Image 1 (cartoon, one colour):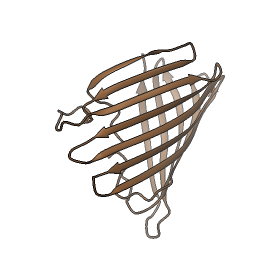
Image 2 (tube, rainbow, N blue to C red; image 1 turned 135 degrees about the vertical axis):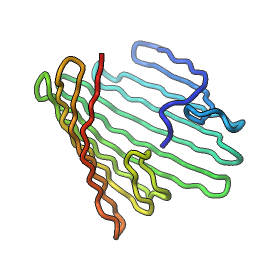
Image 3 (cartoon, rainbow, N blue to C red; image 1 turned 135 degrees about the horizontal axis):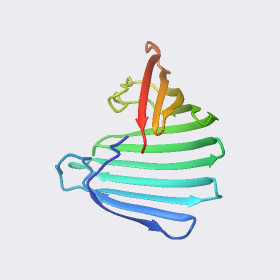
Image 4 (cartoon, one colour; image 1 turned 180 degrees about the horizontal axis):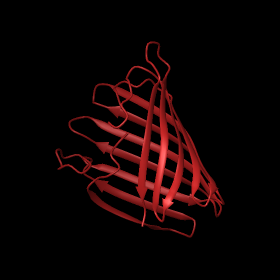
Length: 194
């Protein structure tokens, strides 16, 4: 829905062993130069329900050019235990250009299951609950406008050596609207952690 990066001033910390926060005011233009007087206000609060289960809420308000605004609210419940990680995520986004307002709501579930010390399987399902008004997907996976859709990611993560992960995966986009074929995109992702 928005860039994962922005230029601004932030503060984060812990209010207790279970409760953390992160607040930021940014220019709302990702890594590009600022191009308007509006700012982007971001807040995130997380709470550890147990040692392995946590919940996080995020809220962004982006005051864009003219009368346009971009608002996103999210809640994320996740668990990390021996050999299994999973999460539930809901996102509500509203784009308002000053004349028209469009909403997009997305519900997601994901999981990663370890098979051994060097391998695991992963799956993710996103349900886009509203018809996309404009083509989306962040550029690397274009999605057609004019339909609700389901996105599925299935993969296998193999640790080839210390820190090097090779992850063959497939991305599937299924549309509700007639005349839009299912997209099937095979990939191999390489990740290195040190």
